[in-house]
Image 1 (cartoon, rainbow, N blue to C red):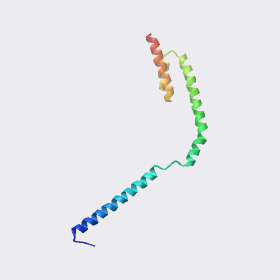
Image 2: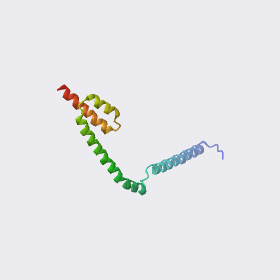
Image 3: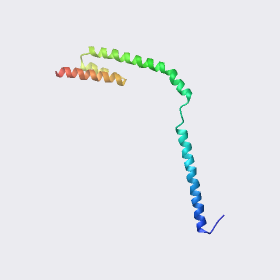
Image 4: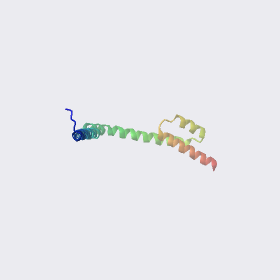
Length: 110
């Protein structure tokens, strides 16, 4: 209903604002609870099942890097190492090749 009393209108508006504020807080709480849900137990189980496979892949990668390191020791040309560097895809491989290049350049300087 329409009212002509200004104080009553102010009380109505403040009550409406308070209701809107409460509704907004409830919405924020709902979003926060959805955003920070704990992981499902089945997801943890999947991780446990995949753990041996990822462990095996990590060991294979370490073996491949050790073999590459031995191969790099045999190379004495910076140009060969540079071509290997450009062909390398993995970060760890590039890291080893760059270290070998730095070592060769230091030896050349000496």
